Image (cartoon, rainbow, N blue to C red; front, side):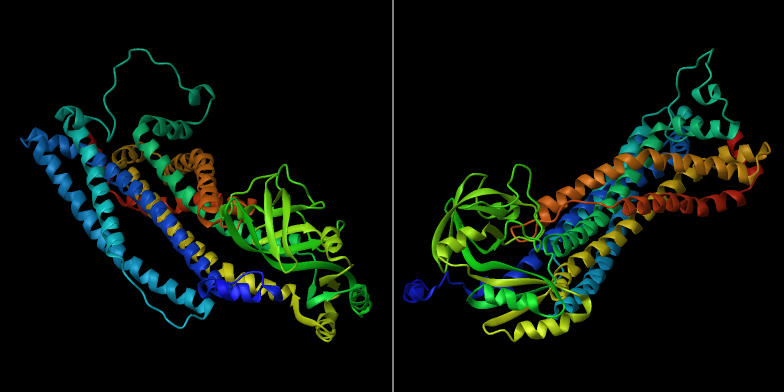
Length: 559
């Protein structure tokens, strides 16, 4: 390759590329690499949240059996026997749930592989099961199930049997006080059912804290998945309608002059035309190099939008260059550094005047007049045009008929290409969103079910005293919604941080640099969906509470 490069140097060769570095191969490899990083990020994130959910649920289950543990200890069973029982309980749930999860995960992978292959028309479809990841997932599931059962069980068995049988699940006996002061709810004059609501939230702080923690984890998952999709949508829209402000572009095999620009402007249906230079090049700085496209526009261009980063120049001056911010991931270059650009005109040195915050990289910008002064003439090789909608096909045909024109590009064609590139990633985001939604529903459903069922004696007593179903449903719903509202802000902020981590550290590369954004509509949908899920999660448990035997529950309370 070095010999061939030396032989072809007189003919304007910029650089040689191996097959693995061919643009199509690079694009597919980058796509697969991004998919792998996304999959690993969400796999770890989902595993962490699932482990937390397992621990919370197991903790709630064991605490709900605190009275039974007290009775068991009172009739002679030792602490080790009870602890071993719950260890086996957690082990069985961890193994059974882990096996079901592995089977479901493998089936979901088959579904996604077929979707992915269909997007890129890949001829070969093969699914693999990585035993190391499978073993890790099973191991983590079992470990957290055991820990979730062990910690509360050890806490319960250390309590005195009489204390464990007398107190509500998860609540230790406090110091008796002869004089009490009215709480905030009473001082505000709230009705009795609202006082019960806030009393229940404060009474079992362990249960409330674990529920809030589960809601925060669920919200963070939903925000991360939907926010990542919003970032890709924003990046695509920013590039197509913010950076590229032309409708059509015609590229020529060699330099052309003002007469060609005048011909394009005179075409029927063309409302504006502008000259530019676009050439392939190799950028070198700090001992590293990367292939780029060097583009040069007029200083007052209306065909290209500028998005300079803080402290960067909006337009490059003579001898200056503006780089896409993603290029720093491959080439160590800072503001003010000198870089070398090798083009068909030879090697040129430029001073870095700034960086552009564009979502798609691989492009750098220089001054048009500066390049033309080096060439010694008003020449260019690209003409951009704005076209009325009804005349695009006609104008495209006329552009192809210009002597020397070898490529006509339309914005609609670029849109189709980029939609194909990001559609697979967006599909993955949708899959993770659905998984996060159902995982969140499972977390909330299990926690609410345990919370309500462990309070059946309390609710039975209140119903016996004359409270109606509507009143009980009201204070339970307000209690649940209050927990969600408390968890909203930390959940959304944690999700946004995870989204930033995903976009900036996982997805971003020298070719793809989207902004971290999340729309207000997405936040509103997540908030409404979370409140709806919480209310729906109550219904099965409340239905069971309506059917319970009040006499039996009241007698059980008295016992």
